[in-house]
Amino acid sequence: MSVAVMGCDGKLIRLGPGALDAGADGPGPDRLDAASNGDGNDAGPGTDAAAGDGSMDCPHGTVAANEVLWIGDSWVLNPGQQHTAVRDKARMSGALGPNEDYVIAAAAGASMSAIANQYAAQESTATKVKVLLMDGGTWDTITSGGTADSVNMAASAFRQFLSMVATDGTVQHIVYFLMPELSGIPGVADLRPMVMSACDQSAIPCHFIDLQRWWMPQYTAPGDTFPNTMGAQVLAEKIWSTMVSECIAQ
Image (cartoon, rainbow, N blue to C red; front, side, top):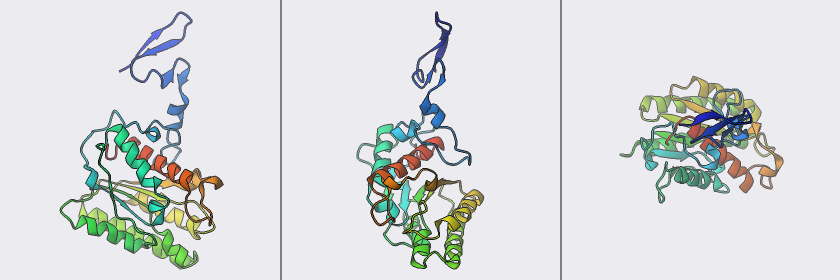
């Protein structure tokens, strides 16, 4: 709890937690950046969450590390900082123990149906999935050159996957990210509104992260298909800030 008092110069002085985040002349840049970017799902860049601070207002310890599952394709795995940076931020916040990590089932070159099977394999074990961190659908479009049929089939497979997850009934949150429009990934622009709509209509809260909104050329590895280290860090920050702002596995 913070307390505001009036200083001799007529400015407010805040004492206690949050004092540095909201100064005398209004909220600082971190707090302004933390606001929604307009669609109600994406957490903005520069949030405290991205720095690794867990939300003080969220319930803690309700989701175990092995109940959070990464599924998807190479964009989860390559170059690797995507998941290790999220893990490190979770450890810093206390959401994970110092030696804990989330489960990773993603595989290179996985179609949307293969990604659904990654989830199903884990869900069939004694440890049920509560949180999904994922991408999916673009390998389907890559292998078909981004044709309209491949986009429609990928979107349909994603909707079927969301329905399956809802029927199983254990997942509480899905964090889905869509990669930016790169020359090595045809079909992203056409796929975007379809998967976004599917997320919006999902019976399970589905938090859509559109990387196109923040992506810059220097985030892409040679070949224009995968993120480099900087791009992986951007992706990790978006995922973790979404998890914090939505109280996911805190």
